[in-house]
Length: 281
Image 1: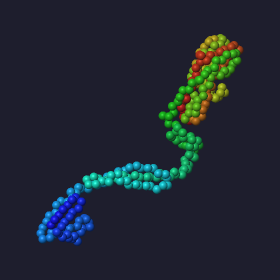
Image 2 (image 1 turned 90 degrees about the horizontal axis):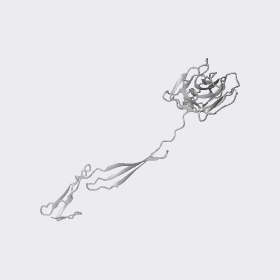
Image 3 (image 1 turned 90 degrees about the vertical axis):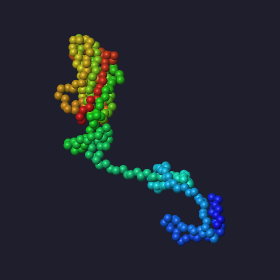
Image 4 (image 1 turned 135 degrees about the vertical axis):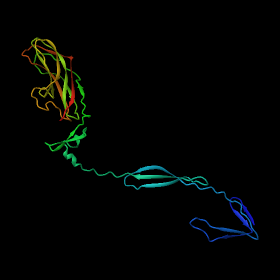
């Protein structure tokens, strides 16, 4: 029997080839019998097969698609593979976003004093039995006051009693109710007959008095120190500025003695400031 192999094909001469009917489809194995004419023969090795490698699957890009579109998936071959080399494939996905939901109603805001806007800066709610509503409460950690200063101070002169406007300090809305804690003072130059007080008011000189400094008679030139103070008998909440509201604190000097003697104040010897002291509303 003549047998030859060139790596591409197998040639057998002088032999019979029998394909048995014992093919097993579950294993893919079939039996082939080669019988040499008049004798026996052997087959040389014709193929040195290498074990196959499992494919490699990679996850590629995940693209966000518009709402309502269909999801997509694409399998791309990156490396075809071969004997001893694994094939490589990449999966690319397209995932649509969810559609925007309809706005929901929030009936809870109907039970909050001031509605939804009143919740700015607040993280707590306290039930108010009088109004049957929840009052937004600013947490203590957020209720930190600030100091505001006068941008300019007036110099004054004359014989009139006043009150003379020395300066005013504007305070923007705060996220909490606050009391204007004022301080400062000025040097008043007059005569032994003059007695000048310095006061601080909310809004105008007819508003709530939140600070006062008392001058004394008999001293032509004296430094009048201003400190926080309200009139005796003032009710709770006097001078308090509600949360969310701006306020202007007015500083004025007034001659309280019965005299027409002249008196003056100077911007160079005057200073005023306001501290927003948080209070329970």
